[in-house]
Length: 237
Ligand SMILES: C[S@@+](CC[C@H](N)C(=O)[O-])C[C@H]1O[C@@H](n2cnc3c(N)ncnc32)[C@H](O)[C@@H]1O
Image 1 (cartoon, protein in one colour):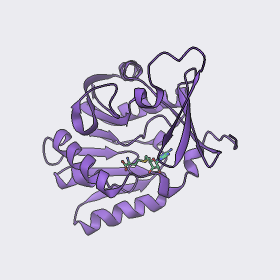
Image 2: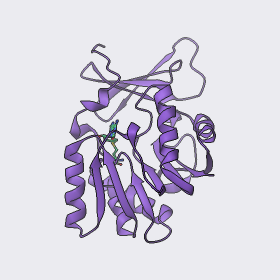
Image 3: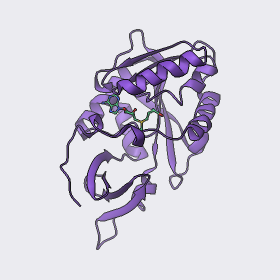
Image 4: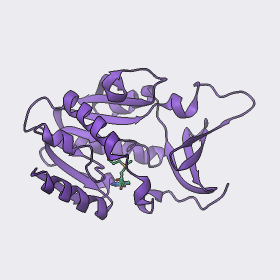
């Protein structure tokens, strides 16, 4: 498999491959709103927000949503989506590596595979940036795939270090040494994503003044490492 690898791949990734279906967004968004929005007026920072197809359900439950995304087309769609629903929302174009939230948000919402795009060092810096955007006592929620789903058992099979599989649009290879997936479309390299397990998240949280307080699988069902999703909630001390 071939193709030039580019660490800034997310700047040219095709729009139509980024977002889950509207149907899935309704299921995810209503479950997230039910679990995470405890009172009207909660300040939610959806970062990166895509076209806000998930966080609009948090707004419907009374959250005040601010969204940031690199893609101007998604930001325009997010603004239109909120306007059509008669909801207030504040959306802007930006790189999440430079995100800020003056005064601190109540909930930093990192939904749908949105953590792990960068190098290990940059991912850690971004974790600190997320923490800096949250008020003391506020929370971070990360929804990412469970490592087991792409990797299989934690130890590599002896004779074969690479694991191969399929995800929508892509064929991927998981490498046990770098803990990254490399994804290919029609044989051409498209992106790389670092896959963290729950222990690594816990350690990164602690280093950034956050503490893991709850862990779930899809739709906030009890956490099971063999289920598809990992939803982690960390609290800022
Ligand atoms: C998998 S989508 C998830 C979007 C949204 N959280 C949702 O649940 O629909 C990831 C998003 O990250 C955005 N993105 C990628 N790199 C980014 C960056 N460096 N800064 C800000 N947004 C970025 C993409 O434009 C895309 O909308």
